[in-house]
Image 1 (spheres, rainbow, N blue to C red):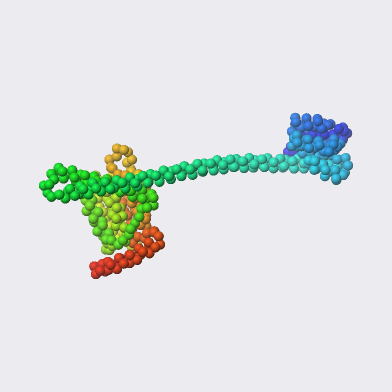
Image 2: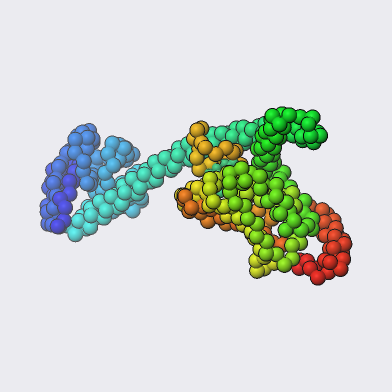
Length: 432
Ligand code: ADP
């Protein structure tokens, strides 16, 4: 259904006005018609009513088309001018002054009036929609600009906070490194002197004194291990954890660690078993770091096992790899905790009253070392049943260093291999 248009006719000639009205009615335009006879009344009418179109007689716009501009400025309404003379030049001037369209009175017919009027309304509405869309676009752009400015401010704030965090973390690492380094010297003195005293001849020390010295030595060693863990962790954070690979007998290193740790297991009445299934025990890796990793896993296994056994096994894997596994019958780890135990300072029991001591840095360091050696660490655990920590490493690790260093190392590896080609080692040549 066609909508009813609100039309304002501005004409000081009643006959003309009637003629327009008749033509509009004949054209079948549904409308609500208002009529005024001069410009001031027209302005007043547009203030009160929102018209769809104004039909303006050109008799009223003799003074340089001012009225058109006034009307357009007052309300956004399409203005169609009825021109007395069929003069195209005047028509152009009228359009320039802001009219939407014009009709020559001489050619005025209901159809033409209806057509021009509907067209003017349509064009005007489209223009209005465009203006509205542009306005919305502008507003959206302003909003986006504001949001961008806010995001930028947030980003700068975050960057600043990040810088502060990095600095705080650097200071913390520096503090850890300095402290642990400083603590190592007196610890080594305590351990060294208590070992010296324990070597005194029988009878020079009473049983009680020997007991006390043994305790000093044991606690000193524990403390040194913790200090070393902290030092390694600070090196790891600073990217300074290094690996110095060489050819060595893996079975011997593992055996030595098990011998060293056996008293700890015996103290808790735990059975400590070592299973070695290596046809070729030689590997190219850092023996100190391998020892460190095994000590970490084995001391954890002993620490977190109250009864039963701890088993260390080493075997060959396909792809020229070796696997070192530490299995225990201890407290186990819940599946939800397994991932987080490799995070720094993370312990399943985080309470201050926890039963088991430790820094929570052993596993992160082991994981970092394993990764540096291009290996992997696998954990299987069942709560209250026990855990298996298995490290899988290439028999010969490759290490990322400066080109020259790698070249020098390759040379020394070749030399070492030759050195190992004695009759005994000839049968067990390394398969690098
Ligand atoms: P911590 O100094 O506490 O031993 P680690 O980084 O070596 O630190 O180990 C992190 C945590 O992982 C331990 O606190 C413990 O909760 C858990 N965990 C490690 N090894 C075992 C294990 N063999 N059995 C049970 N829990 C273990």
